[in-house]
Length: 167
Length: 356
Image (cartoon, rainbow over all chains, first blue to last red; front, side):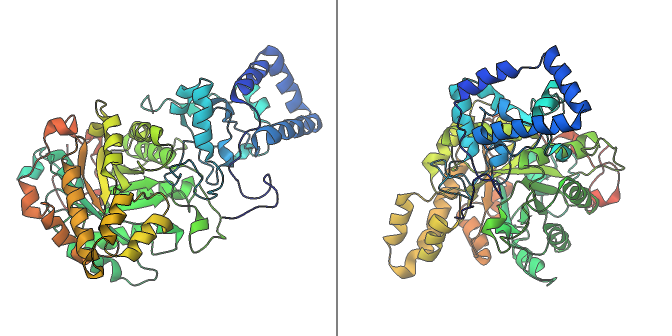
């Protein structure tokens, strides 16, 4: 059992979201992609300084609510708004085999596994079926980029597939 | 011979009766075991551990830096096992390699004729001998399983580039029915089967009731038929081992009644009681609908495996005539026909008939 000076610094640690899942889904509707947002995203990408400020604001918001680590390929909409990048193994496809029967993380037993939280939150939302999706490997070039801009630009199409479907 | 009912067993490198794939195709109860490569460059260690198992098991896992402790690689260990005449299952974890290295090791396994791979996320380095190491986890076990099936079935890398020569291995995964959250673990296996796992080995089964509930949740689905379930077992031969399993090894569940039984016998009889319990567990597991076989983790007692198998009714001659009832497997396991190696000699070291 280790402890980091700040839960947001250093190695990823399971983070319990500070925002209720239903509220998060409601917030998503507010940010849902449309033409205006798409135009905004295009504008931001043409102006690097504004883009950086916008990204910093996104980071501040999502870090305080979800422990966001700015992977740039946001998985929150299909994980009951629980960030899988706070898993010590950064697993994007469900829990590992080391989760304690009571839901404790293998690496930080005193903390609850983010995927256990994700299941509880998605089931309650109710958005449980989202967890059956298979997340494709993360594009590491997007680290530190704005996932909102990426989403508005339609780049999230290939984040997940339905397993068992066409490979 | 019964094993070659399908007429060809392209992946069988060393198994006396068609190896893992042959046993699955024939509906025989499968037996796999496990070997950890040495911490060192000793070329004899793996053959020395493998040889006593030859003929007794269908295939042997070669672990990949198990417990996040650096060892000889599982690729080297698998080749050494092949040379010793024992069919390997090469374990591969996502902990130590990014997607380039994972794919190149999988292709290497194909070129070297390793007939089976077992793909997993892997323990966190924090638990091992290099807690200061970079945890890679570029892919997770599920993404790696899907990538492996892409290499083999589609003949492309994750990047989309085409391969020259496809690997021919069978794709396995691992699952822990005893990890949390309990209600979701059966669904987890279904997801792994959907991602492309053709067999799965489980964590140690000491709690048959719990394991039975997990299997029950899968009954009625086609998951056990698509993805053969090999239940993990092993003999607890000392109270020290009992304590290690209960506290030192994450993800293992030892119920109180097992502890009571082991503590209830005189000290010199603990080993025999542990073996007896393991034999009982194996016999009951093989009666469970959907269980295709066992994965034996010897807990340092490799030499005792033949005796344990014999007492469990799984000696080679006992197994030959034995069939798991087809209805127990849901549907008879049919290895994916796309498995055929694509005509490069390495994938077919046994010289068994190259499929059309």
